[in-house]
Amino acid sequence: MERKELSFYEETARKVRIDIIKETYNAGSGHPGGSLSCADILTALYFGEMNIDPADPEMKGRDRFVLSKGHAVPAQYAVLAERGYFPVSDIMTLRKLGSPFQGHGNMRKVPGIEMSTGSLGQGFSASVGMALADRLDGTGARVYTLLGDGEIQEGIVWEAAMSAAHYGLSALTAIVDWNGLQIDGRNDDVMKVAPIKDKFEAFGWHAVEIDGHDFSQIFAALDAARAEKDKPTAIIAKTVKGRGVSYMEDQVGWHGKAPSEEEAVQAVKELGGEW
Image 1: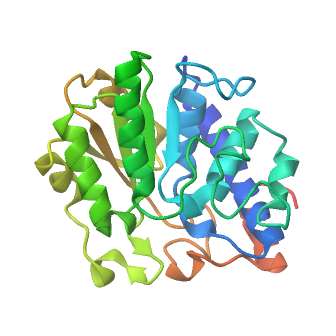
Image 2: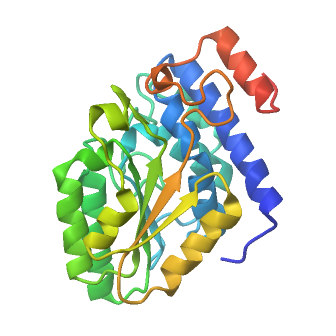
């Protein structure tokens, strides 16, 4: 995909963050913290990396993205809407009775959702299967998956990592949203995950560590993944939970709590949007 100036992605990510705040406020529940932390990564993938077509979500040979940290789906809904898969107004029904925009993405109800996720670690495993299938089919497609840092405490993650390296799935790129926080506190207090890059390398992956809010670094890492022909690539993205909203940044309490109207108005204002 031909890329635009970095300012385009920064502006798009700003809109995505505003959508996330409005979605979770309207729902009265959800996971704003981890959605905000991965907004730049998802924006880079959908607007500057993947071979996709919003007018044909089932396009043969398309690249695929699996949100393994499924609770951050408000970010994916926002990116898909901004990309043109459906109107932004539709996602404001997040978690409402009868809405296709459930608290975890449903591949049978929402165009652009490639895998129903939520049980941590399973999305990563599914992405390994997709990469294997694409190799057998000879599609040349790439597969991307986003994991949370708390998620990589799951044993199934490392079984999948071992399998991907064993089969040399160079078309697979895993991105870890390393914001340092999970539902019960800081990674270092709950179950230390560092050094993540060294662990993926020990499992046979090509691994890089970046600033997950710097689009130049995100795209450089994605280019390096595309250039790697023998191994899967892990991008360890250092991020800030609640990025862009002052009172949410690096605060574990915003893992799974919706903002009040006053808080949402302040957040949207800080992000340069209109309520």
